[in-house]
Length: 501
Image (tube, rainbow, N blue to C red; front, side, top):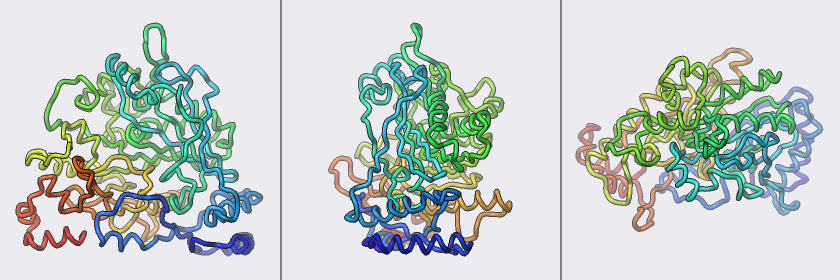
């Protein structure tokens, strides 16, 4: 769709489209996702830049106006104004802060918990996003966290508004499939991987109420239009991604208990699929960075009064910490969940004591990094809906480059659109996913950034961008050895890397 569109043309198009809808003749019209006008990270190669200029097509989505045609012209006007900003005053895309009605559910320090909301009048789709931000698991490191990262433990200085990016953006060009949803951002202020249910008392210095915050937000939103929702997508990144796995079933069960059985609850877990593997180098458990993931959760779940999904609790009775690891909790989840996971997750490497400080890694570290990708790939192979690029990064769905990265020629927004279609068609006809619309996307290449669409890496010591070969050499990549492992000539491998193949 051209960037400059006359508003009258859009209204004329809308009137024609209304006629098509009413006559039942709505065909396979396409909405073309544009490119994000905001500055982005540089891309890794000329080959990728050429590929990325080709926009993808997305089916025109009318969920926002189903059974509510009175609001259709408002939606079209919003679209027109977003495409041609000079046609009207700037639209307000910000999410606004609301504190919970139930003031007994609080952040760590006892200040009220809350959420940010941008309503989309007429839309029956809701996206609730759980923020990430590590955790603390005893009084000492929680005190330290409070001094250095108070925003993640207190609402006292939260801003009144927040602008959504990536899947939280209300711009069609940045968020091709979910731009017209009601957007909700829940700040992370419980430090408990969204699992706690313990209030602040004279005996407890801090409250850990992550699981209760989610439920109270859902209850509040029922008075703001969620009661009329068709789809609720519970999404989150990092600790928020793990929070999705821990809470998606309980959110659905809460809505059912309150009589809202028609709301389809789904999950989108980004960068929350952690492994409980053996660290590269074992260290004492003194803080969240150096402590092994299993030890953190074992200590944390007691300190937080952590709650895990009932089916997972039964599967791991007495060892409920297992439920914080994606590949163990996922098989016990009833609701559909889409997994987004970098195969070489920086947070996983950090807790495994692989610290990428700007110095070339040692051979043992390089092998560990490669093995991590293999292990992660193995845990994901039976997940039907997923997007796993072979990149070294952390968090994805709220990044403004989230439309650029591709796996097997498909971007994440496109894969999520396919997933939505497959769920809709399965519920109607119990059919397999639509042909040519993939939902199971995982890179098979064996090292970090072997996918040419990965976000660019910078040299931590100089700040300079690195191309793929520079990055791999920096990581200790041995061309001769890798070529031998792949059964090819070293010069051919270098040529492939240089071209972004």
